[in-house]
Amino acid sequence: MEDIARNQTQKKTGASTVTRFVEEAASVHFPLVVGYALCQLWLSLCFFAPQLFPDNASVFVYELSLVVCVVSLVPCLLFSRRSERLLEDNRTVWALAACAGIGTLLIPFSAGSSTEAVVLQVAAALLTGIPSGWLFVGWYQAFCKIDDLAGFVLGVVVSSLFMYVLTAVALAPILSPWVMVGIACVTPLVSGLLLTRAPRRDDYVSEAAFPEKGTEQRRALILLCLGIFTVSLADEFMRNFYLEGTDLMFYSSGLNLVLLLAKLLCTVVLVSMLTSQIHHMPLVYRASFLLAMIAVLFMPYTQHVTTLFYGITNFGAFLFKIMVMIIAFNFCHRYRTIPVLVFALTRIAFSLDLLIGFGAYHAYRSFSPIMPDLLGLLSVTLGLLIIATYLFVFADRSSSSLFLKAEGEAASSDSMRDACDRLVRIGRLSKREAEVLALIAKGRSAPRIQSELHVSMNTVNSHTSHIYQKLKVHSRQELLDLIEETAPQESAT
Image (cartoon, rainbow, N blue to C red; front, side, top):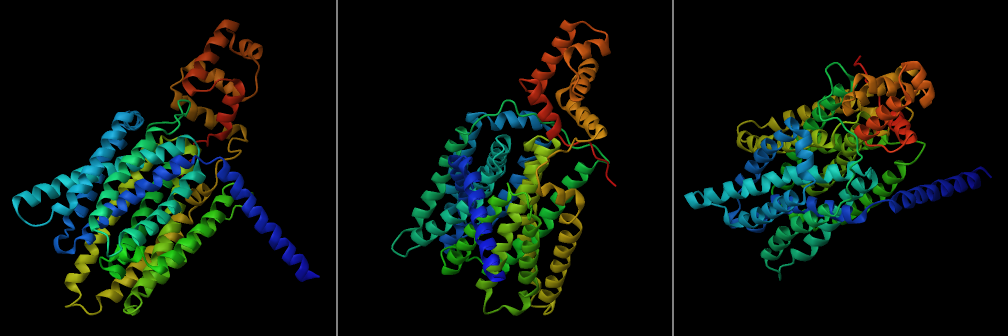
């Protein structure tokens, strides 16, 4: 009887998981999912394009484009609001997409040490480096503003699906490598087209400034970037160590097909968790941690099974990327921080660790002949970095709480007041408008506000109208919902 009851419970749980996934997927903007997946596909093909032409492959473009990406995103940190408007301008998106396509086309011609080759390498790095930062931030912003976290997550696995199908077909010996190059040049244009069709949210309220010093949100943002840097650095080192320039062959392999099926199943569960009341999202970082540790600690012993262990690395990196996306996405909504700033920071962290991880691997290759124990030392060092990151960064209260959307954050009077203070700063409300906002948050009616502030009803209505305009809401209920969904200012402890 107990076995029958257990089986029925398992069936019910499975059904509820599928049901929640279907419900969440019904609200997903699938053209955006495809566009975001194509953007990721382009970047992978762009970085791995030299592998199609081993006789003239050059890694200089890859390294320089990462530097360009980091530098180009600095204005997003300094001029967040202006950058936000630029990324919502279709002309900017088309320019970025065109640069990406042209830069990708230049990569096969940019090998050698002649003056012409160096010029082509620099041009290719500039034309691919800028879109590799800005196009991604544009996509992150689009998903964040329409509150489509499920679509955001689905875009990662759809990109893996595209990559497998493309490499399995286009890498066939009968096809020219230029077919792959042509596809890589077209994908950013299609991605840009879909980004220009993204829904616009003019009522999205956000603050274009770094969180204040001494606050929990500033601590969470710093820890997030630190975690991205350390874990992705280890992933990049392991990618180079295990594959040694055979990435495209791996993506077309049967092992990657098995991983793709596992990613699809995992994505169904993850998307269903986004609306689940059970909240098992911390399992994501535990699984990612376990896979990363297996991959890094076995590096000295995997000479004959390197592809298998890169598969483990790849799946762990997949879970890690989703985990980071969820945290960054919820950070923007919880603290009303402008998405451009948050995602530019995360993109900078990703690009820096790719650059340093790539350089660390080549440094290892140079010193390993004279230091036989170097790989073991690196394995332990990277393992300790991963342990420290997962234990002290993603297990930190300020980060782990961001796995879940803010719900009922402003239940207490103190929290309500702090949330109002945040909205006053975001909307740049006047002193009198701030007083009206605080009274509305307490549930005061317009006549009661008139009485407490000793002003005329016309003045109350005028201040209320200005509050609606500045906070981009259209009714009292929308304003109350905004206050409730806004996390209060939290002091770091």
